[in-house]
Image (cartoon, rainbow, N blue to C red; front, side, top):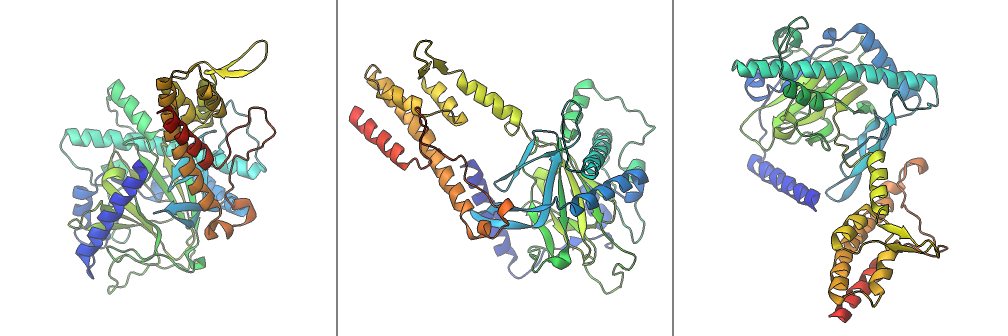
Length: 472
């Protein structure tokens, strides 16, 4: 419900903003504009950009070969996502790679990591090349982690001195230096960071997964137009990244497959961003006063979104003409989204289960509403609870509390099941290849003595409601 309320609020803000704009478009700047440097410094200082020549060439080669390997082995898939209650297939193809057992959720879709090589885990890959590709992404992950820590240290240092970060890139005029020289701390510069601050920096930059993206714009029949600034074709619409540890840094490495024949449009009459070149677009969230930014992304460039930038600003990806890969490294909030957590929750739920030593019959240790709520949220065996509340020995007041608790959680579960069933049966889902279609799980069987509840809970909910009336 919280998510839906948030979506409604966003839609209202978007509608209001577009109504205010009417037929007009908001201004935005590129490196070709005279005030671009100043705008970045004052309104977008927590975006840090690095040119490809600041990254070790060996790392470039490993990562870019890894992208092509994963593409060759058909590891990228379009995701079935949900926006405003409607199903869509993403124009961008993706794969999630990261720590074993981690997951990432966006637009009502949860992705599970293809694990990268990790000490202590016996991970088997279908080919040595895929192993090498995942290993290359760990190398990139480690590199970006170090760069993000340095960038945050540098930002803290400059804020202490009341100096804003001024790192920008202008390829055409070469007006900016690398972040190492100007926007962060040089490698040979030592900074004393308090231990608790350093731990915070580590937590906010220790990326546990990367969401890889691939798209060839020339193969797309239609791309959505950027609606506020007139920036052109979008590969990814305006958004905040979801499911992240609060104030954590996002790092994005870009690899557009530019060839020697690709020429940028440097003609004087060109206004706005070069449509042949991929760009990242940024804007202050729900603001019609501050101009936006469109920053060109070339082969091997990367950028960092520091601190709360992802919360206060929105970003989009503007398509160029050439195919492009990106590796987007995140500190995903996996507090409730790992296999370890799921197994732990199952063990917690089973603590309320006891087995009679003689008859081996199953029963519950407690019918306190707090325990029932916890167990039901974990989605343990529910028919045992119904058996208990039918017993005459139960006090009427306790039975009523228990049933009302059950009604809440079962009603919510029924709603979620209906939504998922509708998604599985939608026209968009049916159009997907067989191995990519969503499926309705779990499958219930009727051959158990303690049979679980049916998939459709309508009748169970109705019976509980009748039982509440009878108790009254």
